[in-house]
Image 1 (cartoon, rainbow, N blue to C red):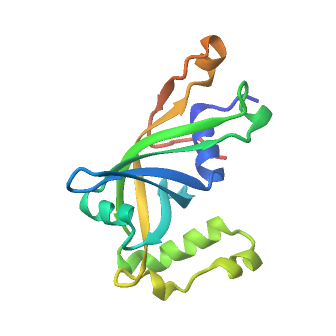
Image 2 (cartoon, helix red, strand yellow):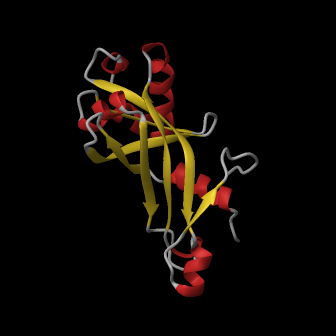
Image 3 (tube, rainbow, N blue to C red):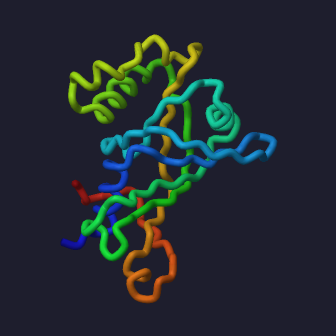
Length: 173
């Protein structure tokens, strides 16, 4: 079965758990960080938490524009011909304000740990996520997105990207 570009994007966004974010400080210093995220399909955003004083967190507070990538190399026959697939993107991020933290907390843990017993082992107290505390939730809105061009790779082994039009309108997985 061949997936559409939107279906490939949604499969990757929903099943990959780590994304590498490239942020920049107000002084122009670049930084890359890998974070554990979840994809919120209702808002088409990525959600994660980090220490509030982490370098990428401070960068997001200064400059909200960032880029990133996520890849899966374990897809086997699901992603012919190479068994991998990936996304690169640009967007804007923000720290989740205190009045939205409870919803973010619930979404993050429910999506990341669907099994309630496992979730109970990993969930951190909500109180640790207020903006005045040591952890913050962050939300990323993807504004441009590119997929690996697997057809081009099959044809001539050129490593190219295909831009995917956002938002994802009809595709669901």
